Length: 525
Image 1 (cartoon, rainbow, N blue to C red):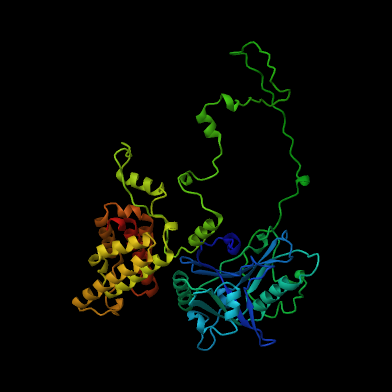
Image 2 (image 1 turned 60 degrees about the vertical axis):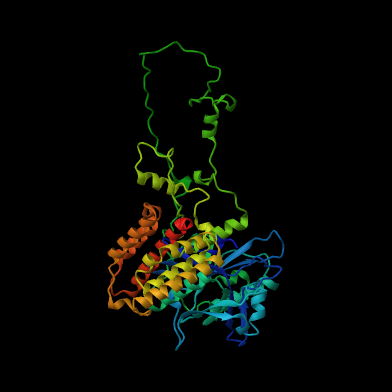
């Protein structure tokens, strides 16, 4: 799956891509009352992955939901894919009765309807040993729209390509309610739950799209007639298209531009410091002066190296090359960055590295930016384990706000298990943390479900306490995870004591900071 094609980037929208996963769509055809599906693979369109992409902007409160379907209209290997995007505006979501506009649940594979399970197997979403699957339900009060490239076809599509086009059109124009199935993943499930919660409690908007700039200037909306499919219901469900306001007037033609003649300015040659003219064989006959380039054979090695064009970043020299699948997986994990998975290396300074002009903080920041391959980076961390640790910390603080102070050694060991991607050690150490926490809560005579409304939080005090805690583990830990702490401070400044959403965001970011420290320095814990 090519992530660059799966994402439809809106205009001037800083979105965090939470979910980018292959899905199977299921809906009811109102004309025939039959169940229809989109997302199964075939020999003709084996690479036609039906992909869900959800981007969220926390500061702008924007939500972008799109479904990407690449279609190969010809069976030949040289045929290029046509990329089509079904955009579901957040304004089009609407609850019906007791059903929310957007919901997510987890189903066991044996509980999936009999007619749906074979389609999930053909889509590759249910394999041998799979026990759970995620289902996302959409309820619409108006329809979305499909963005597709314009262009005439040599002959109408047939067979599988035609069926894919018909299913995509039926989904976008006829389905007032549809479900999406995707493989179960703890990270995706947590992301989707938060998206559904934001949709139900926060007023969200859809970012604008510059449709005309897509597909090399051939982007259009619902041009089904160009694919030999007349637009009978094109205007039946009018939807507000979120297009960007861009200047469309082209620049003037070059043949219409008349350059204004400028008078020649004659500058007399100076006689001061003149020398006799020397004949030059290499001098060109025109007015430009050309200096011959020094042959590389006579250049020093350092000069030749400086002239070489660097194809990669200087930071990538020490890293091992990944294959194509690893690059896609790394790009996928970078798009699904809910918890700010930036690199956070463990810092160590040796005697020969310090410069007399550098301060300790400058040296730490420089080493943090020039991270080596053996440090803790995003690619070394299992997002599911990291999300589990963050979620557990959030629950622990709801039971005992000072839990991280009493469980320092246990949390460091838990972070080491996340860093080493050891699920078995993580489960064992989590049990140790939970057992000790339960005894601490019992001794303190606290109630696990106690709400924070009884004690309004002091965010600035909590930031100072967590920084003091991490610096006890390592004296410069706050510099190592400075980016995460800056995000924590931003949430703290904008948080209100009666704003449950902001309070939850602060606790989540605080858990990210603590988990990051435990990952970086957990090996010594």
